[in-house]
Length: 153
Length: 279
Image (cartoon, rainbow over all chains, first blue to last red; front, top):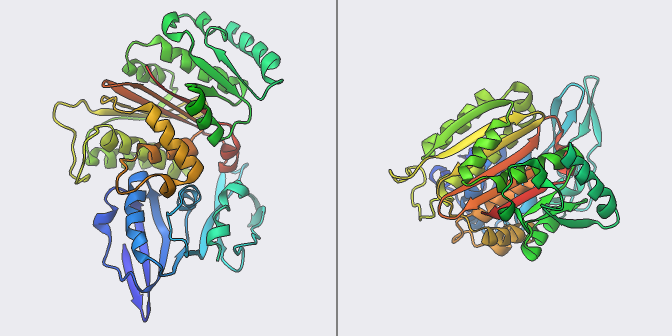
């Protein structure tokens, strides 16, 4: 975990797995400071890690948290587990997988709050074209975008 | 196949009229397959589901005490029934691991586990041993599911309080758990066998029902829970078929299945099968 402090806010970068040894890897954090948690380098979150994560993240209390670059493995857990992130958090960006069946290729699209979604609206395309290759949305929207009504900003 | 034709008749006559239907193993003619112990198979209910969602499956297991719910294509249900037949044909849970292993066309990894280092090594090996076609599409999901299985075998199954998981090793007299991943036709199978047999299936189904229906923090205190409910709910949520067979005090067998050729979306839309029982 890396923590970068700038003026009144801090950015926490989570690296690798959130698992049974997550609490040994946490850096000192000011839980009262305005915070952005960047999850672009999160590789895995398991059930033991979820417990450690909830114990850690609940210390932010009523401080509003912003989460960025959330990968699918994290969004799946946000959708399944109440309390994985505090109620007043905002997911500022998250990854949406697209798939090209013929070429067996995946493309990750970064959905950004305000641009592609809000709490009440989702404008994420069903398909996208990258260099002439058509990729289809590779999640079930009703299931995957469920968290937006709570954390869509 | 004689057994498959018999099953198909049941589908058309019983199932289309009702959304779900239960049959005993004898009615489904699994006994025709040969090696099933007829006494142990008697009165074991199999539910053939049509479009049952995750919470329906768990509700039926919890309230109706059904051990097997199978869904999917005729071929997939046929495979599930063969597995169920295997479950009732064995004397020891370990035999089920060997039976499922013998069906694999290709084994990617088979390993023993008794410490955090073993778990790390197995997960690291996955990066190298998965075929590139599978790695590119399913790598992160396979690592998550494998991690949950290994975590369960390592920390939950011994049924002791573990203060430092990184330093924890099985007691010297305990037999290491076994982990296996391979492919059978177009299905990836991930199996784990522990020699503790500590899982209480009734309690597990209750915990899974709470996690799937209510979300984690509403139902389980993170300070107290040892986690079989949450971990197994993740396994159930992310796989197409989950099988758990326990012989209390002896061994527990887990098996998960994933289609190797499907996109995320198609996999999420697939109907799930589930088998959870104590033998």
